[in-house]
Every structure is written in C-alpha cells, then in structure tokens.
Amino acid sequence: MSEKAQQFVEDWVENNIHAEAYQPEGDNSEAQSCAEQCRIRAEAEGISKAEIEEAVGDLVGYMADAIERVNDEEIQRRSDKDG
Image (cartoon, one colour):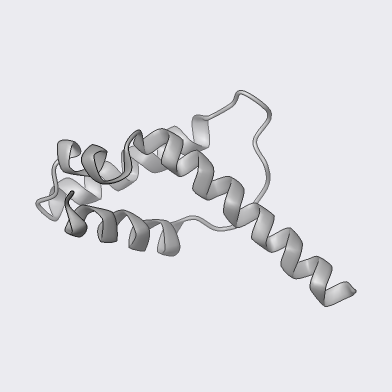
C-alpha cells in the first residue's frame, strides 16, 4: 500500500473538508467534487489514481464517509459545548 498516497488523502481531507451540512440521501455530488479535487492535486504531487485507490479504495466513498464524519464531529462538539 502506498503510505504516501494514504497520508496525502488524509491530509487533503483534514485541510479541505469542513462541517457544512449533510447531503440528501443518495446525493454524493459533494463527495464526487472533493474526490476529483483531491485526485487532481494528488496527480500534481506525483501520486497516481491507482496509488490512491490502493491506499483508500473508492475515493468518492472515502470522501462521502469523511464528509459525514466531519459533520457528525461538529454536531457532537456543539452538543458537548451546550451540555
């Protein structure tokens, strides 16, 4: 597995995905857009699509999970703050 690709994607997610809103069920347009932006940036860094897929699997699915996780974490953070 490409550790460089794994680390690149994790760093990209941390720097580019922020809590905004949940997407409607079945709408993965935001995840697709994020995946495409990440893939373009990775290629500029010399990381191929194949390396990314080997490291994280389906990049759109990975981004969808990351978006949901970031939103869940924000809800938890707000709940903890209010509670």
